[in-house]
Structures are given as C-alpha cells and as structure tokens.
Image (cartoon, rainbow, N blue to C red; front, side, top):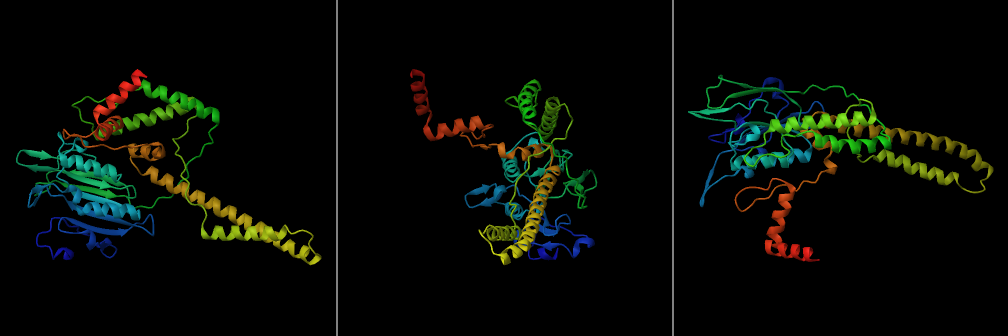
Length: 389
C-alpha cells in the first residue's frame, strides 16, 4: 500500500502475504490509480517471473468533447504487451464494467465487444468457472469481474465466488494458483504410416458432417456462449480420436505436431566447425609416415566430436518437444486445438460495419472489404462480365 501513497484515491491495489513479501516486486511503470502490478519468481522456470495485475476499468472518462469509453487505452494493455513479449505468466483480476454473454451476462455492450477483442488478440483465457453475477446494486445484477490469464501463466484452481461474504457491491472471489513444479512425462510418439494418414483424412470430414455442432449455424438473434464453445471443442476432439481409431485400429492419445526451434547452439557450431577442420586434414592425398601416425589421433578426436554433436542435437530436440507439449497440456480444450492447428489457421478477424455491428465470419469480412474498397457497383459489373463471358 505504501507504493500508492501518492495517489489520493487509488481504485486498485494488491495485498501481499508474508511468504511472498520478500519475493514480490512492485512495477511502478505498470501501475497507476486504476492498475496495480507486481511480479513474483516463477518456480517452474527459474529465469522467468509471473505478473499479477489488479485492474479497474472505469465506465467512462470525461473529455472536453464529451465522455468517452477508454477500455482500449487502459494501462492493462501495456501490461499484456510486456508479459507476452517477455513470455512471462500473467494473471489479471479486473472489474471490467463490460457486459458479454461469453461470461454470463444476458446482453452485450460495446465495452464487452472491446473486451472480447482484447481477449482474442492477446490469446487470454477466461478463468471464471461460475458465471453467477458478481455485482449487485439494488435490482441490478451483472457479471463484470473477470480473471484472465495468458498462455505462460500457471493453472488457476478452485475458482469460487464467496457469495454473501462481502460488504461491497462486488462479491469476493477466491482461487488458487498451481505453482507446484511437476515432473514432465514424455508423451508417446507414433510413427504414422502414409496409408493410415490417407484413411484418416478421408474419414474425418465425413464424421464432422455427421455430427451437429451448437455453433455451426447459429440463429440470427442467438448469442454464442463460452460453454457452447467448450462443448463443441470437446465434441471435435472426440471426433478426431474416433476417426484416428477407425483408421489405425488402435487407440492412441491425441498427439500434437512438433514445433522445430533453433537447434544449433554456440557449442554445437563450435564442434561442427572442428569436425569440418579435422575432415579436411584427413582427406589430404599422399600423406607422409609422420602424418599417418598423427591421423590416428585425429580420427579418434573426430569420432568423439561427432558423437558429442549428435548428443547435443538430440538433447535440444527433446527439450523443444517437452516445452511445446507442456504448453499445450496447460491450456483449455478449445485453446489447445487452436494451438495445435495454428499453422493451418487463417484468421481474418472482424470488421466494423456502417450499421454499428461487426462481421461474424471470414466470408462476410471479405465481402464487406470488397464492397468498401471497390464499391458494390464495380463488383456487380465484374460479375455481369463473367456471366456474359
């Protein structure tokens, strides 16, 4: 609290318990009247830390030309960008004043749509497991208190609303962070035969067509909720597993595509260069007697370097595979599928339309973009020319 003494009326703060008092660092550049940010060491990664941010997003701010909503201008955005750039974990606990059906409200507002875009752009996860109202004032009830985490944050456990225990108009929320370091278990890797892969590619589209997804063809006035997305993600996972079992006649676990990172470290490059140097010496033509005696030692050194280089590369590949699988395992079901197939995904995003709404799918986005840049009249002329041709 002493760090906020210069603010006469702070609206966000973090109280630290004694076990973390000496480990916590207050980030003044990421804190103001409405935001308070600290960090603690990440026990899972010795060279990383975890940000904890308490953020209040006021409903309006008065400017000379009138009140404006400024959810996108909050200091919270700076915290999000810095955490993702450093690949540090981030836990945000915010009074968002944003309404959206994605976290339990009956209606949406423009602040809710802004918050949805922020969650999507920064790949955040909504950790709320109970969508009951967290704000009560008179007859008004809404869910505006959100717990958000990024992909590098530890798991949130036992998220609970402590109903009726708060003297404020906001309910108290309790949760635990999983900071226990668990031993990594290497997943089973399967070598997929080409014929099995082809059968799987033919079976999967058929099974997807047979199943009905809740968000496949939503009605015009219906709102897509988070529970519907999670249920469809589980259904899609089961379809993939069933299709694989049918193609392989074996029940494997859903494996993920390996990501290749940079494998050559400085030590590996040094050993490789020495191997090239020794190979060039050994390939000399017509060696003398002294050179033949010396080359036996060179061959021993060459074999030793080659063996060490193979070990270094194999170790680096194992580490990359373990890190990727660990990052996939800790994400939610829907986010896990997105992460596995991210190299195949093309996301055009949504665009603002003249009627105040946003485009809902890539086709509508492309159509609106073409109408805006080329004009509807020019597009109709092109279509007439194609039909005549």
